[in-house]
Length: 431
Length: 82
Image (spheres, rainbow over the protein chains, first blue to last red):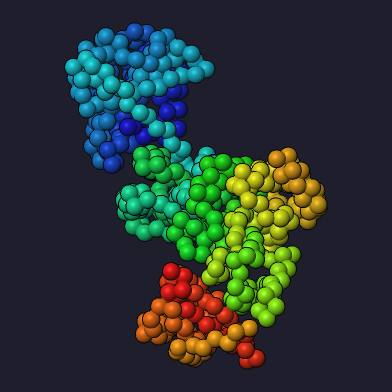
């Protein structure tokens, strides 16, 4: 792998264009870092053949270049030449003249001048292998770096110059042990040997150097890890452990967080948008803090034939919506006051309470500069499909009505909750 | 309503979680299946959690009475859930 800056590429390009139709040539000095050839200096040399189909580097200039490399502590990593009117691949002559299998042979094709193609090859016994070239922005010349692009790609600019905190894409706060080990390796190798656990269940690796960004991305990719999202888009999907692990869990928060991640993660919106999923009324994941939060619930159904009127459900109900009259063998249930916590179902010794698991959705929460608690404007829904319909429609609404830089809650306050409520009820009614 | 005659009584109003259930568990171990334990406990967390734990262990709550002082008296049958 060859890593060179955009500026170095432009040096080669300008030199080659200025000499065309004669072939241009030169040498590349640099260092080997973690197996990648990092170009530090491009040496533009004279082609003493002065030919459109051959090149021979000026011997004196070659000697001067290598001397300069030694002085700077660089190695001779490779060379380049241009193909003014042919594609970027080694000619028979190029193959025959290639003497060092370790050297990179870069060929810049100017066949299409609007779209010059630079490729790198390793040649061993006339057998050609292509080598990847990664162009990075500057390294030293930071003026061209697009910070918004980097932020979008999960690289957060630090106080320290040219250092970035890399946020990872994680759904529901779960990461495999193998992936975690890779994170450990990267933090040690490219960072400062530690990680930061973000406020929303992601991991950041601070102190990544600008020039290492592409290499780090590639290393992560091999382990199914990606940089996370920041900026005006759907952010990390958070979730508690839910019913797969937790005895209180009423829904599969992990499964739903993975679905959310696949469908909505990093979707472009007017402002940041946070999705969080909590498994039950205990609300460990704080559903109402999110722009859209989901909470597991259990809608209870009373089966009188099983009831012994022991009074336990009345004692455990936090909403005080159950009254048991043991003397009269009577139970009163005020369903409107029920908060779907499921405690009656969980505690009933005789199966007189049964329940249907569902999803309670909260909209418009935010906990930053301004604080607002998400509101429930829809009745509990019972399938993940319905939840997705609500999320899709909510994101569509935000995209349509939200002003750039306006949080979802503020859009709702400005445009009107009733408009969203009507639209959500319509998509749910569509079946 | 029938009066329930307990085989043993336990007060856990001075205990906090998780000692509430630990005390119940120790007491109930001394009983035979079918025998009844009367437990007096505080409202709030104890009454929400202790009976649920009893259910998980296979014991059946047969009566819960709310007392004037916001404590609860819970009657439980050892092994009553089979």
